[in-house]
Length: 160
Ligand SMILES: [Zn+2]
Image 1 (cartoon, protein in one colour):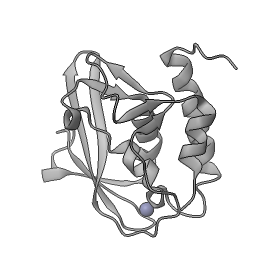
Image 2 (image 1 turned 90 degrees about the horizontal axis):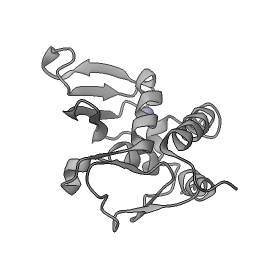
Image 3 (image 1 turned 180 degrees about the vertical axis):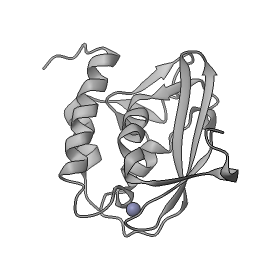
Image 4 (image 1 turned 30 degrees about the vertical axis):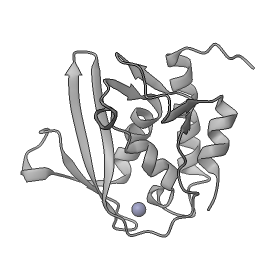
């Protein structure tokens, strides 16, 4: 297997993988029922005093956006923070977005109230990532662990 994939190639593989996961393996429930997914979309570099983004987080949030009912906090569209509510289970999340510079922005989705029975296994630290962390400052190596695609897939799909 090719191991020297660049960010764009890894992103394309993850995009295709997450699309098929949402259409297939995730189907017994809504995406909320997978704690490892919840942990990945909640990754926020500011919690680690860094300036970087996580490829998995960005790609998943792009795919999850159409799955949620979205209400801007304070009723102001595009202000950055929104409340996302799952129409299937009723769980709600705070969606945040911040731009650090012209080509570095981050987004995250952090639970406000979960109303779901977990189907997936709980997250572990360090979190295995295939796409990984891209940015201006070093990632916190004790929190995230680079793995190959199969390693990430095995982690992401593990059931409770
Ligand atoms: Zn849900």
